[in-house]
Amino acid sequence: MKRTALALTAVFFVLAACGKKELPLEQPEKQAAGAAQPSPGSASYVKKDTYFKLPNAAGGEIDLAAYAGKPAIVMFFTETCPYCRKAAPFIQKVYTSYSVKGLGVIGVLIQDSAQPGLNFAADLGVTFPIVYKGGAISRNYRTQGVPYIYLLNKEHEIYDVWEGYDPSFDSAIIKAVETVLAKK
Image 1 (cartoon, rainbow, N blue to C red):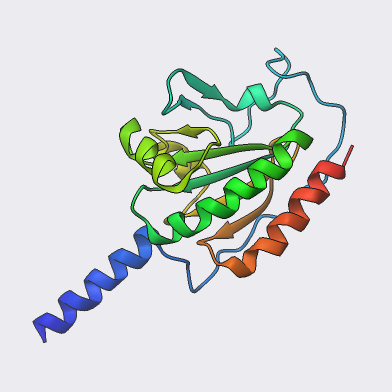
Image 2 (image 1 turned 180 degrees about the vertical axis):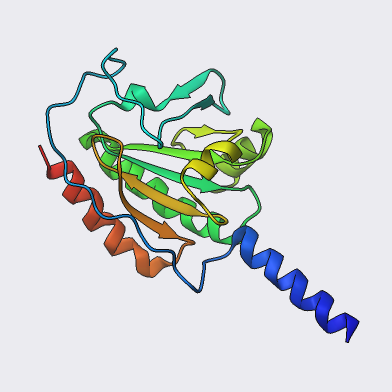
């Protein structure tokens, strides 16, 4: 009986820490893009609950305000999460295809050290920016494990969210990215 209880506890923690959730959270309502946006780094940037300024694994810092007026994908992850490792090549393709059209892409490592983010990028060929020390920020986004992939509109409000990762999400993510990029 003790073995069964221990096994069930272990399975729960693995799913809570890194898997796709079987019971999806209520997703935030999709937000419509509105008024004109300030230029990147503008003093008039309005910091919302989605705002962060975190250390870049490659050095320096990344400030979400630098992406003012641009939609962004924010992916919360850990180095060894298998679903995160499955999501990364797709998010890299999105970054390659849509960053030239104005989409920001940022990986947010919830761990407190840069090295796991550097390992993740090297292992998977990721070139989009990766920040670390994202645990506190993940609570602002109300994540419940990793990966969580958020699409922020140009005002940096949550437009859509994907819990976990499955290749079946790819077309919905692309459609949502194209929609927020097209909004003036």
